Length: 83
Image (cartoon, rainbow, N blue to C red; front, side, top):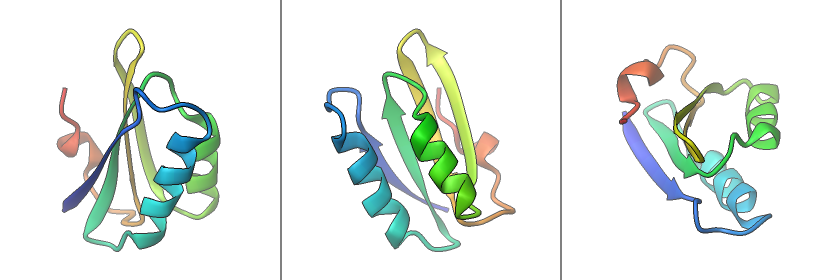
């Protein structure tokens, strides 16, 4: 699978959501969004789930979240997470 990286840790609201949605629109079954953030992006996750994307969100350190989103329902996101 091909990752599309987005480091949103230094971005201000609403830039992370806007950039993430732009990436989600371009994803296909062989790709995924790999986003780094300071918090769990609940609105983004809900939006992705409403559009039938597979999501994984994990806090790996205080104030550091790894968020993976793909349209591929069979993708192994656990195996793609980098901690």
